[in-house]
Image (cartoon, rainbow, N blue to C red):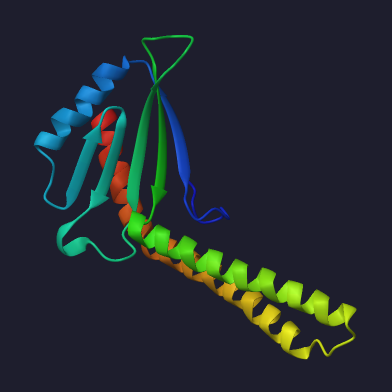
Length: 166
């Protein structure tokens, strides 16, 4: 999976397997019984959460979220959707920061429009707008760096995933 040239911060992959969804799910359940100590797996119905734990776990450690779907045209095949991403708490915090920056940006865009209509100086408004745009770019760059830090662990999770499905 190529993740370096992709603009998305949460890389995805799709895989089709010629096995029944229950067989594939059972493979994950069996593997979870003899899981290496550096990994943790949670299985709920057809959703699997696969993560790094222990001493190797850092704030930027990736999580692999796997969704098993029965193919409509062939019930003996399984479609797997995988999504690499940060821990849910970190993702929530990042989204919170994005919404705060977007909210401040919108408010000051409205202030700038009001000041423009009233023929008032716009300097302060433009400064805050520029700072919010800079914050947005900074958040994106931090996200890219976080993903780059977790790339090695992302490959480890993908290797374990490939061992499971054979």
